[in-house]
Image (cartoon, rainbow, N blue to C red; front, side, top):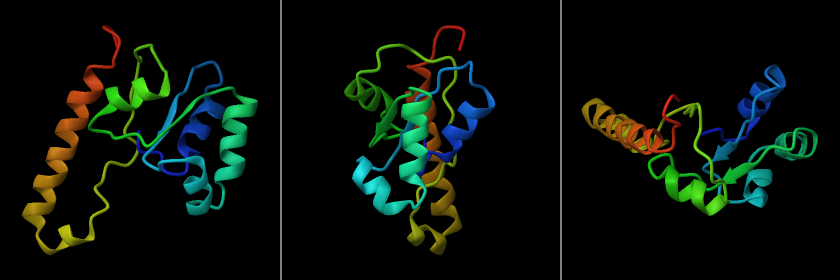
Length: 122
C-alpha cells in the first residue's frame, strides 16, 4: 500500500522473485501515474510484463477491502506493507497535535482494514 511510483514493489519483486507481489498506489489510473512519475512507464512495464504481477490503482489504505475487491483479487495476503504512511496534507504543519492525531487515525484505520485481508497466519 502507498507505493506512489511502484518502485518499492518492483525492488521487492527483484530482490525476492519467488514471492507474489501485488502493488498498489493511491494514483487512480495508469495515465495519471505516467503523468506524475517519470519512471512509471518502465516500472509498470517490468512489473507487469516481466514479472506478471498485478497493480491496483486508487487504493485507499483505510478501505483496502474495497480496493482489493474492485481489482478482482480474491485471495488474502501473507503480508501487507504500508510503504510511506502519510496524509500529504501541508496544512497539518500548523499544529503538531492535529498532525499527530490525523496520522494516528490514518494508521488505526489502515491496521483495521489490513487485518481483515491477512491470512490467518499472516
